[in-house]
Structure formats: structure tokens, C-alpha cells
Length: 241
Length: 217
Image (tube, rainbow over all chains, first blue to last red; front, side, top):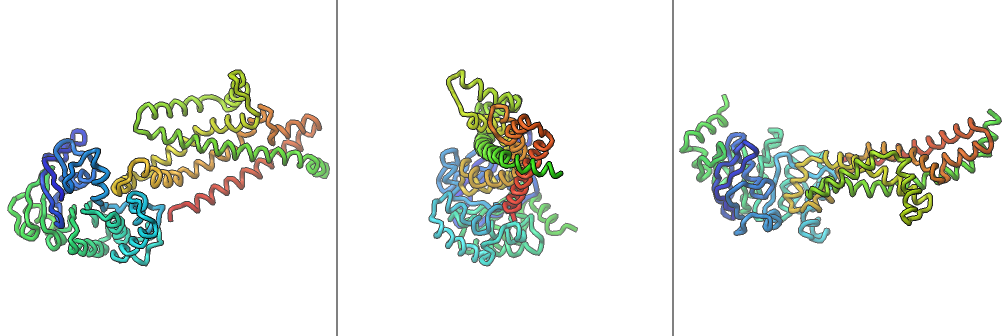
């Protein structure tokens, strides 16, 4: 489904990705974990072209990412942002139907009916006509997920979806993501929620210094990592004292 | 005081006709300045370098010439090139062009203040640059640009008095003619000042109302 092959990316002198390679199969849930600045988010942003990799190749559903294929790939891969990035001048429902109506050219009535279904699915059915600013972070993020799903994506990229939330609000978002995973959605999740990765992900990938240090079945790897660097990271995250 | 009132009653019909022309001139020039301003501001954001350079040149040149000189150029110089305009049309074009650069700077600042993360969200939904501009940057940027826009619009109303120099019988010129023929300078100019205020205060209030209505809730 998604194949990343030896991608490099530098911002000026800052070499963020140093040859990252991994693949994600259709229906798989993969968690990208690692310290801040390890390049996790940059990998994600390269997949839907928000950043352009300096070298290496990215293939999505058999198509090589490039100028010609970018529009199609962006339509098939949706993104959920750390800071939600909902459009503040549009209501919750308008946010959700924005892509279907204006990019997919779906009839508005059809898109709205589908949008209301999606909002109900993320538990936001009764807030469709509110503006995003009136919602809590967890609610905004659930709308962000509905907006991503409205594009009928083949895969969803999550960029630290719970990092900007009140601790109390993390669970409601993770639950939505879990049900999405159980329905077989292909997901790449950059997260610091190790418990979520262990419970929900099929595979975990640990990155540090712009490279993949270790990857494997999520439960096994996050319970008993093989690499010392992974072990150190998990120790620090799970036992901060 | 009594004399002022009887004079005012006599002068007001003439001045109100002038005020009507002032308002019409301001509104027409406003439409021209907003449309041109949006064009300059969009050009200033273009990926194509020469387009950006052209926008910067237009803005600097127009901003660097006094409005009264620009009006003279439109009204007196264009006819020599075979383009004859009615005074009112010349006023609309001259004021509209002169103010388009200020509007452009208002809009440009507004567009630049739109959170780049929202542009990323638009792109991640598959929008191309044009669609993202139309659906996200334009509506949000205009909201941000509204307060300076209101300021500029009130300035345009006041500067429309410069059109009196190219024979347009707007409020200032109507008043000048009255003052010259009646020698009641005091009464006439106090009335003109009050009439400008009567037009500009509601205008400012209108823009503030627009701001509140368009505020993102």
C-alpha cells in the first residue's frame, strides 16, 4: 500500500531524514515512535507531499509520488494533524464536507448526509452546526478525523493526534482511532502513546536520528525491544521517574 | 445662531446634492480599489517571480505619486492620448487606482496572517493552490484585513474631496461654489465638515458591524 525507500530530507544544514525505508500493507496499523526531532512527523509529511523528500522514493497504491501523481495521492491519503487545523470560518459539518464537495465534486446533499453519518460515528453528531472554536480539543480532533474520512481515503496519516490534548481528552480520540483500526483502515500513526501502539498497532517502527532503528510486531517490540536505543527510549517514556 | 439656521436651510439642498455625489464617487472608487487591490495582492503571492515584481512595482509607483497628481494625469493627460473621460469617470478611475495599492497592502497583510497550518489542511484534502486560495486564504485573510480596510475606506471618503479639483461637483466643490457666491464661508464650511462626519461615522460603524458578523465564533 505504502512503500518508502531510502528517503533523505534536509532543512538547510539540519539533516532530518537519513535514508528511511519501510512499507505498510493495506489494512495495517503502523505506529511511528521515537524522540522529538527523530524525523517521524517529517516522514508522514513526505508521504502526502507537504514536504518533498530530497532523494529516495515513495510509492502509494502502486504510484510513485511526484508532481503528476501528487493530486491523486493526496486524495487517497488523508491526514489528521496534531493541532487539528479545522477551518475556523466554517461549521463542523462544513469542515467535513469541504473536501468531498469542492475536491471530489460530490453533490452537496449527498456529502452532507455522509458527513452527518461520519460525525455520528466519531460521536459528534449533535455538534454539526457549531463552529470549531466552541469545541474542546478532543472534540475538534474527532471532527478532524471525520473530515479525513470524508475523503474516502485508502489510508489515514495521524501526526501526533493526541499531543495537543488535555490528558482527560486523549481517550476519546484514541477510542475513535481504535474503532477505525478494527474496521481495517490502513493507518500510520506518529504517537507518544505507547499503550495505544502496543494494543492497537500491528507493527511499530522506532526512529531516532532520522533513521529506522528497529521495527517489528507492535506488542512484542514494545514489550521487549531488541535494540538498546529502543529500550532506553521506552524506559524513559514509561518510567519517567 | 438664528442666521446660521436660516442660511443652513438655504444651503443644505445644494450641499446634500454634493454629498450624494461624494457618496456615489466613494462607493464606485471603493469597488474599483477593492477589485484592483485583490489583483495586486494575489499577484504579490504568485509563484511566478515577474508577477510578484510587477505587483511590487505597481504598488510602489502608485503609492509614490500624490493622489491629486494622479487625478490630473487621468483627467488632463489621458485626453492627449485620445482617451476622453467624463470628470466623474476620471475621478472613479483615479481614486480607485490610487487607493487600490492601500487595499492591496491590507489584503496582503491579511493573507499572510492566515495560519499556514490551515493551508496545509486544505492541501491535505487535495486542494490545489487556486482552490485553497478561494476556499481558505481569501475568506480568512479578508476577515483579518477588515479593520485596516475600514480605516482605508474612511480615508477614501475624505480624499474624494480631491476630486473637486477636476470639476466634479461633490460636497467640497459644491460648498466652495456656495461660499464664493454668498461669502458665508463660516456657515458653509461648518456644514461641509458636519456632512462629511455624517457620512464617515456610519461607514466606520458599518465596517465594525461587518467585523463582528464575520468574526470566527
